[in-house]
Image (cartoon, rainbow, N blue to C red; front, side, top):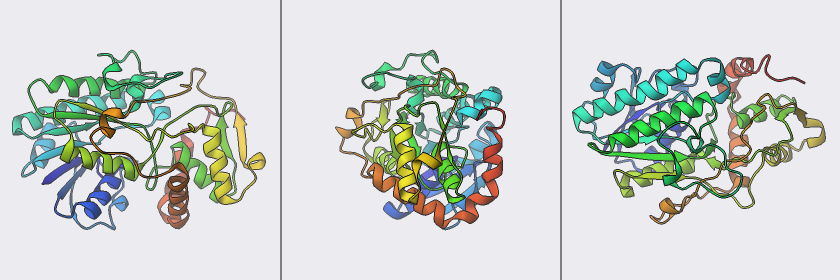
Amino acid sequence: MKILVTGGAGFIGSNFVHVVANDHPDWSIRVFDALTYAGNRANLMNDATHEFIQGDITDAAQVSSALNGVNLVINFAAESHVTRSEDDPQRFFRTNVEGTKTVLAAAKTAKIPVIHISTDEVYGPIVDGYFKETDKRNDDSQATSAYAKSKSVADDIARAAMADQQVMVVRPTNNYGPRQYPEKALPRWITNLVDKKPIPLWGDGGQVRDWLFVEDTARGISFLVEHGQWGEVYNLGANQTPEITNRMAAERLCALFELDPATYIQSIPDPRPDHDVRYGVNTEKLTALGYKPATSFEDGFKQTVDWYRANEAWWRPIKAEAESIYQGKEKQ
């Protein structure tokens, strides 16, 4: 098995590379990454088992060259942050939509299967219940941000390609864990607490996300490499009980740092007036095949905090850039 991992120097992609090196030493990995702000060679430095190619997934010649000798593509490459998409939606469309088209076209020519990594945000929010794989419409009308809309269109393109090539789509929920750029909520909050700065909690903190530890995502995808069916879509989520609100997540972090949440959780007006209140996906299709995430909310948060505490040299140089995207958006 030789796999081309696009976006393999990013958050989920790099964790997938590390999990495969540990769990499947007989698999060979070639990482293809543009090394944008969130793609970091340092994410892979402690793993010498992969080959690395720097390239852009919207460049057909580069993608075609990277496919030489591989027999599977896993497409993680994406622009992924909602706040950034508000200011530069075209950048998200280029990478997430045009990039997906390019990867699929090159793989079709080379007769190589593709696993496309989508997101639960293609379904949009749901007040109660859970979306099944068949609940996504064939357009971007359910998605509520420029990021989610670009991923929704890419998801549609990948599913349309199933008609004449081997394609599988995976829709993970809200990932967290080591090596996540500190623009995202959890690493932003953790790195704030390291510096004894408060957590900026938007609104009442009642938003519900299905917090999925990134190594569980990586293992779910590697499980599908072996057990998934081509032409199918799979939801991948933690489905915690009880569900975890943003406030509960913030309080858990304060407890791990032994800090008073009354002092270190700062409620601020939500800069998104129509902020999605809850996401939820039905994962029965995947669990019926035999896969279920193994990491509890408590253990996953502890592992994540421990990693950021031990790897300050990784996040300290990029913290200011991550914070800069919120300037002018958050009102105290």
